[in-house]
Amino acid sequence: MTIAFAHEGMRQDREEAAYRTRMIAALGPDPAKMYEAGKLRPEFTAHVDQLRDLLTMNANLTGQATELRGKLSAFLKR
Image (cartoon, rainbow, N blue to C red; front, top):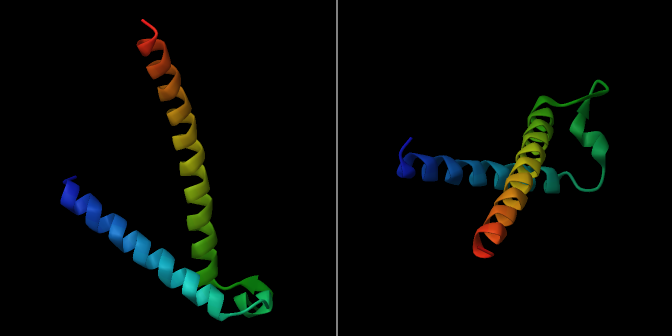
């Protein structure tokens, strides 16, 4: 994957997240508008899935960052 391709993908992800945020904000405080026949509407299910993925990715990156900080600290103490 080239850097330009990765950057374009990140831009698209940001735009999609911004769109979904505007879409949800426009619904106001009533969550009933997000449901249809007692189930979460598909466009909101996708948003929830994406948020779960981001939470998992964040947890993984936090763990990796902690590990790298430890390694860097040990390296600098040499």
